[in-house]
Length: 288
Image 1 (cartoon, rainbow, N blue to C red):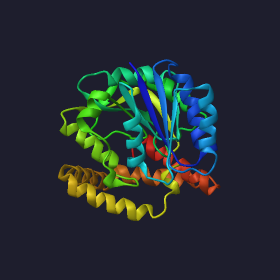
Image 2: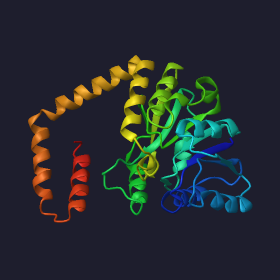
Image 3: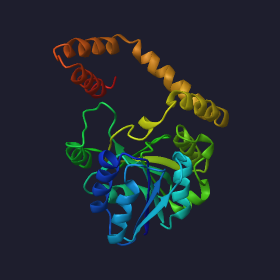
């Protein structure tokens, strides 16, 4: 089984891309693996880094764009160039745990599955680049093999070639970013597949290293959300249902009591930044 890893890069070489590559390569087989790098006109030495790396690793392919084409268009370039039986789309701001790949591929091989994501940390849950391997070890011991979900995290998502040939490329109408992932997940379901999260396979996501550089994020998000709802009435219904359930939950006495206890206990932390992280960590722990 040949694997094609496709990563989209746009600057952030030192804080994201290089650590990602140094984390990925030791966890992947040397034979039958290709790494396709689609660079959206980085200006921080990203292309030079991969050109040098390519000299000792000919399985690395580089696509250099003369401008920033956004997520969908860049990933579609990588998908068009990929030759693998399994295609894995990745952000450039993730780190891979020991043994993640085999656990990930075990779920991808299931014939009923369309898209697969490893388990990913959430923003504010206390997981860091320093302790994520410990979190990964707990997942391998305590988690089920996988769970089906209509939407899965898109910072690292894999699919078999036969699935790709059925559902096609990402929709470039959502350029530069936002809602192309929701769209792709629904299209997988429409094609008769189930989307899954490989719970024993864990990766660490350093959130928003790419979209954090994007200007007018709010306007782009709102525009693509409208377009997504026009394309998928089911997607709009799901979002409305989830919002209603979330609002109902917030009105419960138990929810409010937990919120106030967390807020009161956080005031013992003088540093505002640490106080915010403390709150987010506890809110995640208690499911708030």
